[in-house]
Length: 87
Figure 1: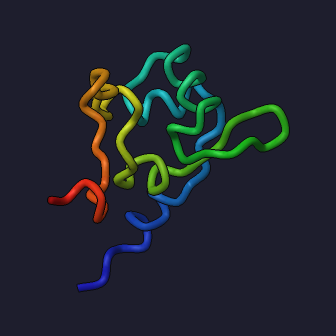
Figure 2: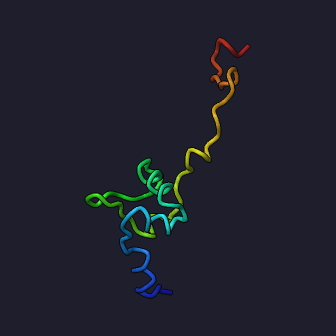
Figure 3: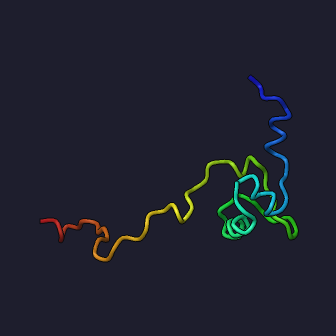
């Protein structure tokens, strides 16, 4: 089944400004600006304003640093087995 043209257009309309982008991704303006500057959100600058589309903002993305595992404690690093260490 083919989607109505209006549904496709809504996802691909430009959204301008960090505040409006934040509404789409449910972040306050400060958090949105930080995420944009760090590259956590798929958007680009158009002059002095950030811009993106709903399709780009809502697509699945790589995990953010907060979701990544913490560093391993000292002494638990993984070492590849070599012929010298295998008995």
